[in-house]
Amino acid sequence: YNELGEISRFRGDLSSALQHYDQATFYYEEAKAMDVHIPKFNRAMVGLALGNNDQARVTFGQLIEHYRSRSLEFDLGTALLGKAVTLARAREVDDLEQLVDEATSRLGDEAHEPDIAVLWGYLADALLDGGAIPLGRRAAKKCVHRWNRLGNQARAEEARQKYGVTGE
Image (cartoon, rainbow, N blue to C red):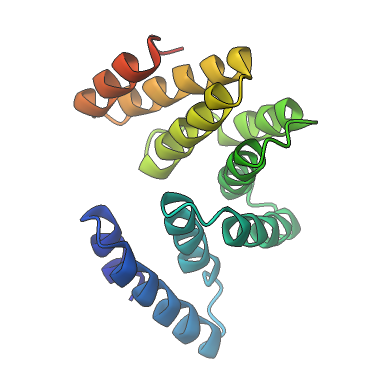
């Protein structure tokens, strides 16, 4: 079901994606699967896309605890970045730069995950809209850089045009 959620999400059918992620979570939990965190993360991404900031914040907080307890550094970086988006959208910018720095150090320069580029874009939008220009421009540059690393030149160019920046 998680894969069906991914297909639905990337096709823009967020309602179906949520249903599939919920079903995946249910079955993963029933089976006591180790990777139950995956559909939960994906559901939080849909929450961000729908502007459901509170739900996404709760889920990212739970995922941060889960990933820390298992020393899953890359996954922890993605959850920290997701939480940073929720804080920036709520205009809670105290300690936000520290959170972004921690996410950045844990993510490294992995290129295999489009959600990271999306999260950097969400963060850039929230920060720039909220007037946090230096950190917002930094996030925008990371967004462009990630799309470039993924080989998605169209999305990289779209981000360059939107934010008026080049990559890192």
